Every structure is written in structure tokens, then in C-alpha cells.
Length: 131
Image 1 (tube, rainbow, N blue to C red):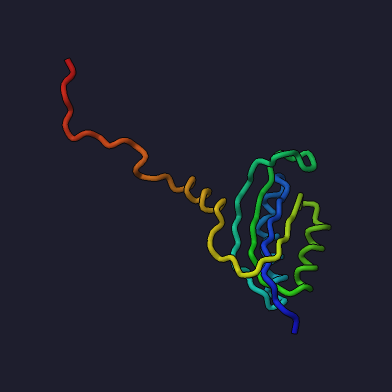
Image 2: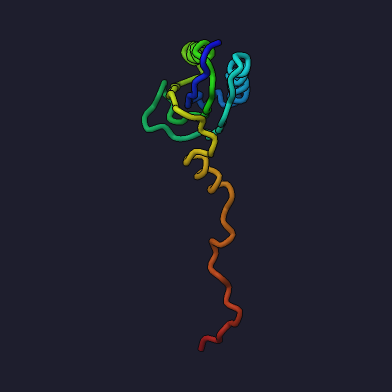
């Protein structure tokens, strides 16, 4: 039996192919689960501005995955990244433990989606006449 290791994966999808993101996520989850691995965290960060153009694209669709899998599954995922033209870039980092809590970027995205109710100044209860 091969040892399962923890990895953090970020991949960037070409913005014109953002509609393929759910099927790509499903493909990678299938590879991981078929090798008896686990997906501990999955975050779809959506389209974001790139620091510099990649293949003439200034934006990309970002996805973060924290997984636990064996070497064979990781090799298959890397092979799919390398030969899929929808993937602009990918990064795979080895981790010591499973990362399950939301990432700082995902927390900031959630904060932007749910506006705070205390953003407006309070309305005074009495109105004073101005002369």
C-alpha cells in the first residue's frame, strides 16, 4: 500500500474556458477518490487579474485544492495539467498536514460578497432644526 501525502494545488484556467472549471474539478476529484485519497479543501476563487499576461490573457480563473493522495494520483493530475490547454499555470506544494480551514483569499472573497450591515452611519433619533 502506498503512502498518502498532503498537497496544496492551485491551478489557473484560461478565462474563455471558465465554463470548464466544474468539469475539471470533478475530473481531479475523481482521480483523487479513485486512488483512495481525500479532498480536504476546495475553493473556487473565480476570475482574478494576473500580474502579467500569460498566453495573451490578463485574467484567469483560480482554483485551490488541498488534497491527500498517493504518488500515482499526483502524477496523473500533473500529467493532466501539463497537457490540458485550458490550464494556464499550476502549482503543487507538499504539506505536512491537511489544510481544512478557508484560505485568507477565500475569506476576503466571502467578506466582499456579504456586505456588513454596520457600514452606514447611524441615523440620529432626533432631528435638530438648523437656522
